[in-house]
Image 1 (cartoon, helix red, strand yellow):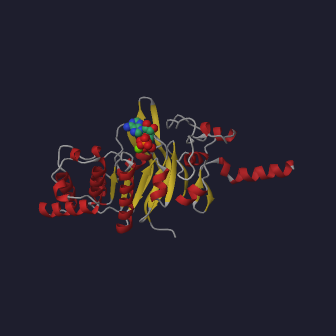
Image 2: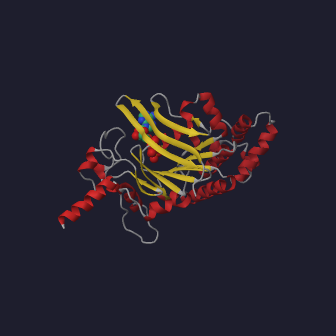
Image 3: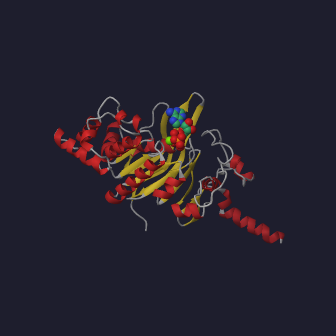
Length: 339
Ligand SMILES: Nc1ncnc2c1ncn2[C@@H]1O[C@H](COP(=O)(O)OP(=O)(O)OP(=O)(O)O)[C@@H](O)[C@H]1O
Ligand SMILES: [Mg+2]
């Protein structure tokens, strides 16, 4: 069943204008988020995951960054063209984000209560402080924090990493957002706490129907939480499919490499596979497939032309010439001629 689209990113281009030249961190990216779904975005460090989410939130640092093309459609509005004031409304009411390291978004100088009450009053105009404090306690309990009343009087540094991340989630949910962008929400946490936070996010998705964009470099997190996944490489989407399909039938050589490098609990391997080489800096490869230099299947065309996203099945798209129908036909023809 195809759900209603709550967010649509079309041909998004976000570029940093640096002394070393232009860095196209988000390079013609297309995807959508359906009502109530959890969509994963995966890819190695530097592939443009955070810049994609900052672009949606209207938080790209400018200068040096700027959205130079494309559209971000939400509720019949193109967010790219909204003013800062309008974007603040969207951030306060519709789309919330939690960051990798909660200390960057919690103010160390104010108590948890101060910060939560302020966020609540911004949303619920006309509420008294007491009403806001009650709501804050309710939200902290909702995200599974014990002794919520006392927590309100504490400062961020008095909390553990997992507790801070829960506070961040509570704050993000204060406005009852339609969309929650979670940028590596569990990377800084140890494995047990990580599992608890992911469970919490799934519960919130279930209970409130909040659509979640789950950004991670960890395919384990994707397998655990997402229905559908997008794989990014050097600023581009290189594969998109339902999660099960990505694991059962990965197509792009990069995705195959990512999956091979996930530790497998069942068969203990001595050494994990890792994809040779590094992600190229966006913009350093101007023509051809961005992955060609690291790809064991690369042929001439890969170094010369930019592959498009080929539709390889109803719900599966892959940016790789191996899946170009024309090429497949030519190969079949050659095979017939040669036999
Ligand atoms: N302020 C900036 N100035 C210049 N370049 C930037 C800036 N912020 C990001 N970039 C570049 O944009 C590209 C994408 O960065 P981004 O932070 O989106 O990666 P990421 O996929 O989130 O990686 P990670 O997994 O490490 O968080 C990188 O090449 C980075 O160097
Ligand atoms: Mg990031």
